[in-house]
Image (cartoon, rainbow, N blue to C red):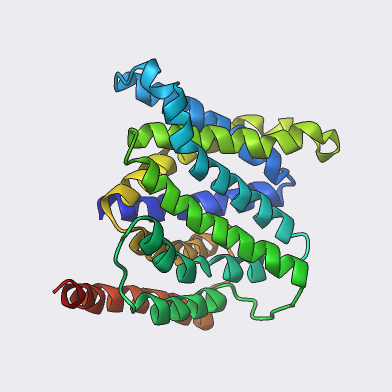
Length: 287
């Protein structure tokens, strides 16, 4: 549980500071490219410090095992950024969290992980909480934007699942390294091939420093996925939405309304109910 909570906290800060960079005008593709390469370099250094041989890191079987999760996280990023051209960040945040409804049955099919039926009604409660926390409750329907956001959610679900599946065959930190490196190159290649997107040299060093945080997030996430069921990790990851609201209030002087507090309460309530009754339900099913 330690790594799960560590991931949730680090991810909340990561999303908050990503928002900070985007508000400064840093292009998302460039941001993913530079911060991802920095994190990948740190992960490689970490692997070498752990005395993982280069042959175990750089071989055909390793890359083949880590490739699916790398592709899925890249597609999740690309679909997510594209959807924001058509819908608001509020609408996107809500639609992206629908991966709560994808992951339980996908992880059961692909990983053979049992999931409590409670995850579905609790997922709807969490989605309601996310909606209230966003402080903008207007839903603007756009077919292209909604489709891209839902595709991003689906790709994110596959990323979590195949990230864990890859650890069956190779070292978990090697998975984290290749996932971060390939996704940085895949998303960054679009920026490299489209010079009109601009070069944010003004924030070069700051983005690289953010890469240190991304390095820590990668380590925490892969350990959380290995030690916990994927559906549980995904459910708990929604605490980040609540923490982001608190960070925005204290660090960026954004408003925190009673409705947002209610939204946070719904998310925490769903997680508490899952912990109390979810385990009981699983014991009954296993018996």
